[in-house]
Length: 148
Image 1 (cartoon, rainbow, N blue to C red):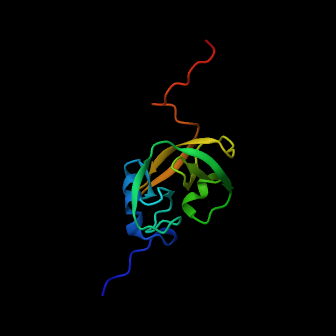
Image 2: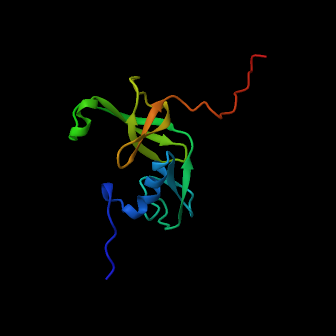
């Protein structure tokens, strides 16, 4: 008899999410992209929520994204975070077209549509994805100067 799949956070199979956690551990963000309709998705799942295809690949997210929504947490249920309250959780629109949630670093007030970049925090047994205000400026093409 075959054993049931291991289940991780929010009912996502640990097997489906393993590539996400592996890449996060080396400070890279990867999301799934459907091999049939090419739409990206997060959290990881065995089938595409758009077309139902089981064909998927993992694609790297090089930049951050923009804030879609946010909430300031004043009281946490996890004792590990009590000293860090208040903190801000943001839902971010990523360039590939899906959304992800993470903590926003810094004291700047968040704004919807605000650009954010990826940052990674290593903990004892996992790596946490966070965001910083601002757009990525390294390795970006220069904007043409139209004031010549």
